[in-house]
Length: 102
Image (spheres, rainbow, N blue to C red):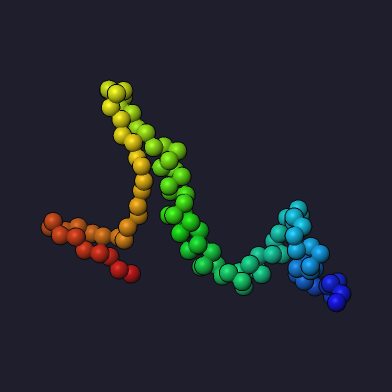
């Protein structure tokens, strides 16, 4: 099977078997991949996946990088964060807690 793209079909040229693993160096070629990415993954799924990665990985890395907070008044007093969890949104009114829903 011939992997050559039809004339004028630059999108297919980026997906042939010979170029599948090659790095893309030109900005114009990278922009040609955007429509395929959106068809494959969708815009919303990409944002949800990015947010979930931040909650599961990124925020923990931030906490680990800043895990110790030392008091300026007494350097022997400090706080050390060991983990972080992000729960469901809640609101508290009159000493009662209610979960928020969309």
